[in-house]
Image (cartoon, rainbow, N blue to C red; front, side):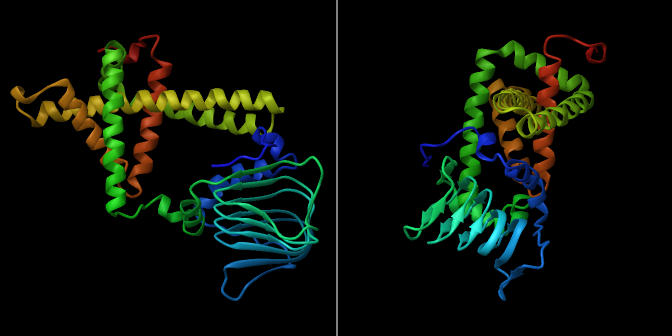
Length: 320
């Protein structure tokens, strides 16, 4: 992984609005939409490359396709494809899961952002606007490129030996995390499990509403508020989501493990450790099933955030 010396907060990196486009596309890309809204933009015969001739006011955006800027464009973003600059781009250029190649006598007027690829200059006459940022993150190149070209794999992962090995490692990790947390804070986990058993649906409803609100605040803080204020609000929101996820997953694992142990195993084969292991394996399985893993993931966030919000009090609906 590599970062240029000019790396800064994400919002200053995209002062011309490309950050907002990136956040919007995180959701739009799941439907594998390619935006072509200008007559000067054409597609190659093999449908793998967008060719921009002269579109100085156009934000060029592509999913699973490469982009070649022949003459002019306002900005360029490719998810799962490369970007080649042969002419002039007045604002930002970004790619996720691809490379950016700037050829000689070309010009980029904004920032350059590459996640899962590289940025290369070809020729000494390739020009950049002074003072602009360059960020490159060379990680997960192949995975991000495959995702950009086939976003449906997010909903239906392919089963293989590597996928199975990954799931086993994830289960082992969460088993260790669950053991550590239940050992350090047995009372908190016990109360969380009790609240899940008493009122799971109400916890889910409360947590789901809070989750959507926090997600909206993170996006608003990132794209609408001034730099450091927006970054601070976004970081706080992410921390709440992470706390909710960890608490929700550990509590749900223990809860499901105890439920399974109570109704399936004989009394002489019951233990807290065994219940935790069973819960970890069952939840790892749920999070590995095509399409159903999205529901399981949202349930973990919802329950976890609901537990965080009700951790300091015992509302009437939680009483037996």
